[in-house]
Structures are given as C-alpha cells and as structure tokens.
Amino acid sequence: MIILLQAFTVHCQSVGVRFRPYRTAEFAHFRNLPHGKQSEILASFLNFYKIIVSSSEANIQTTDSRSVIWHMFSKMGWVPCSDLFDFIKNDDIVEVYDTSFHQVFRNLRFIQICSYSFEEIVSFEWPQLFKRTEEDSGHLLETSRQLISGEIRHTVVPETGRHTIEEIFSEERRVFAGIHKCLSPIFDKNHNPIGFVGVTSAEVIATLAVIPSPSVAPENGFSGGLLASK
Image (cartoon, rainbow, N blue to C red; front, side, top):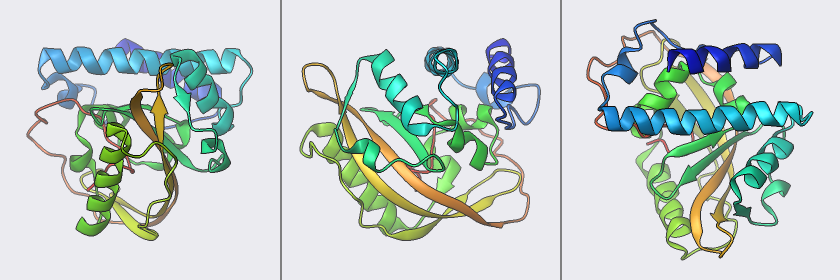
C-alpha cells in the first residue's frame, strides 16, 4: 500500500494535482482491516492507478474529466449511457460504483476537493465519511439500487436539489454545497448492469472544528464518496 500510494502521489504531483496521501505514516486505518479487505482495496487501487497513468500517457489532461472517464470505460470494457457525458464538466466530481456500492473509480477532482487522506477514502465505508439528510440519502440510495438491479436503465437526474454534504471526521471537516447532476447506469458488453456513475457539482462552503479520527476500524473496506454518503 505504501509503495503504491507513494507512486500515485508522485504521479499526481507531476500533473499538478496535490492531495493528502495519508494522515499518519502508520496507515492504521488500512492495516486494521481484515486481510481479505486489504487485498480488495489494493487490487482496486492498482487498477485505478494504472488507468490514471495510462490516461496521462495518452496525452489526456487530468482536468479533462470527460476524456479521463471515457478512457476508463474503454480500458474496462464497460458501456455507459450515451447521454452521460452531457452532464460532465471539468470541475465536477465523478464517482463510479460497482453493484456492491464499492467506489471503483473517481476523477482527481474528487480527491482534491475532499480533506480526507486518500488512505481514509479507500479504507472506510461511505456512511462513515460523509453525511447528509436522511431524506436525501434515502432517495439517492433507492435510485442507485434501481440502477444496479436494472429496473432503471437510463440516466436519472436526482430530486435532491442543492443540499449540504458534511465530512464526518476529517481534520478540516469540510461542508459542501452540492447538486447531484445525474446518476447513470453502466453495462457490460451484454448490456447487463454492472454499476453506476454519479456526477456531482460541489463547492466548499464551510470548515468545521477539528475532531479526532475514529479509533475503531470499519468492518469492511468499501470505499466512500460524496455520492453515496448518508
């Protein structure tokens, strides 16, 4: 984990993207996870890293979110809805989830806007990282489930409107004003649903007091995001 994260950090710095790789060098959050979950996280992280590097090698600007996400789809062999890219702007947050609600890909804008370390992002479940109102969370979760099940097979504009999203235990505890622009299903080559994409426009509107990080590690390694938070 440490070596891979160092390589990823160096690459991001080389293209002008800065973020906090970890809060402490001990990697306590990650190391407290079961070995099976550690392996899942490492495999997902390695795939993410390879796609980011290969997009740079293909002369794709890291700030060009549309091109980076399209590059990811082509590498993975996944099929998005044709109108997905109409919703994506370069300053948007783009998150990709599989059918188990793992965040398997995110654009670098997501990493930049959060004040969590990257280790925290991939080591904690999404409800442990961000929160919003119960009503908004319930609507997003139900819509996501319908996309995953295949009940909805087209791009959806959520009804949540502009709302606040709050970091729970990061050092800065940033508060965002966000609008979920769309949720859109992803299919395999046989047109079976295999996940979904969330596109969010968000800005930092406040920073709350610093609080300690949780002392108890999560039970699993599901990674988190602004989209799937509660």
